Image (cartoon, rainbow, N blue to C red; front, side, top):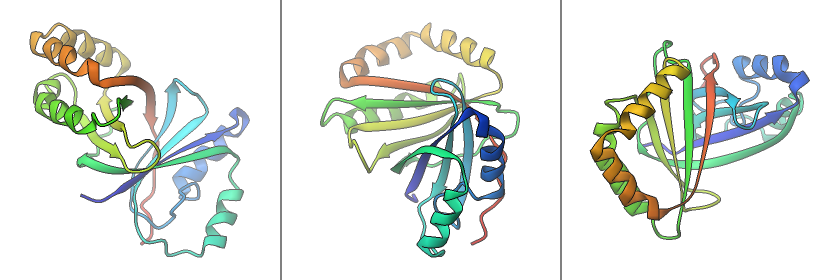
Length: 199
């Protein structure tokens, strides 16, 4: 499985249209030539933020050229995470308009146990909504796990969560996994149109 990078890019509200255009045209991508997997913008949570997902490849453009391209984009800040897929990324069809990114910070040394439990329950969980990917952090905090879920609508997400929370097997899983979790962060995302990178 290829290592991926997830870049969170914050921008000013007044620059939203310019940022969206920069993503679509490929200018916003930190590694301009890496295969692009997905792009989203936050709709709930920290607003005015884009999220770009791409394979970590060999950088073919000169650093100065990339830096000048990025300087033309009105970014307030950028944070990049190097991630190892535990489950490969599966792009969703265009009917999926709502994505939920969940970031779990585990207590030190609990990532492997958490992932074993998560992967075991995933077939049950996916009866309610598709999982797009599961990653473990390779940079920053090593005790983090990221996963991404796809929904057709926010209402479908609400119905799915209600249904899974009523499932006894899921409740048993939550009781087992909860002591491993120090913190959970969730944000809702809308997918953006992207062009393929020229490799």
